[in-house]
Image 1 (cartoon, rainbow, N blue to C red):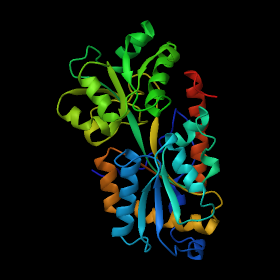
Image 2: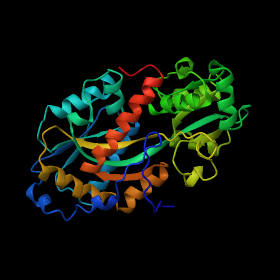
Image 3: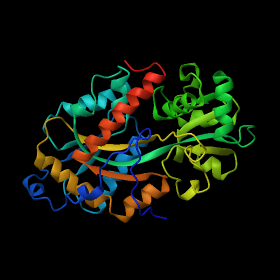
Image 4: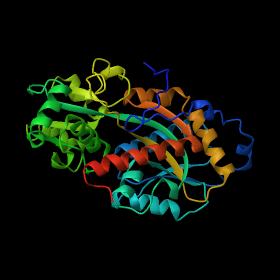
Length: 334
């Protein structure tokens, strides 16, 4: 079922007064001032098969099949440095709108923790595309039955619950658990977080009883939830999700105001002109209205969040400030 309402999901509980009227840029007069003249590269700062790569290939497919971009579109993977290699490659083409990159909030968190000198103000933000919530999940036979019970365990002994946070500390998954621990009255810096090479390893560790809980992108646990092997305690969306998670309460519903999102954005290199940005805004505004794009969001349990350049920058500033506070809570902000 397609989500008719576009919900603005933000890190933490901030509100930003930006509406989607800005998406009506398809008719922007400036859009006619620039058109691609050669092949376009959609850069991904991770390897093939990851979440960002899949998003980039969906963008490529929809733009090509709908003929929204007439120039050839190529996905180029530039993994390394926690995404820094891809962003550095993008900025080697300053002012050239034939190069764009699919990114996520690691562009913010890597800067906050000192892993990268680059952040969202160092590139040309074109748009945000969608968000995805974090799911906190346990094995079906786990004695932990709810977020309230999990919070109580953390409060009594924060080291008594081991959990996977994916492939790196400081991620949205890690922050979700840190915020819950803080609200429960525990010290997030003492949490027993475990890092694996990828989501598959993390799921295997949970199913094998090597960790008590997994904090992951919601769509990663859908097959195991459907098979009865995993029970989702709660999700970090502002409102209850639809589809596979319709019966899963949010953390907020369970008395803990933790709203964390991890989504995708599209950016160009620094120095893009208003006309170049307007062109891409117009293309993406058409893309997000296609049936193919909406189907992909629904299949992956993503929440639509299309914001064009200026409101997207406001949104990212809000995210940056809240992520800095959250990472400070776990001793990772520089």
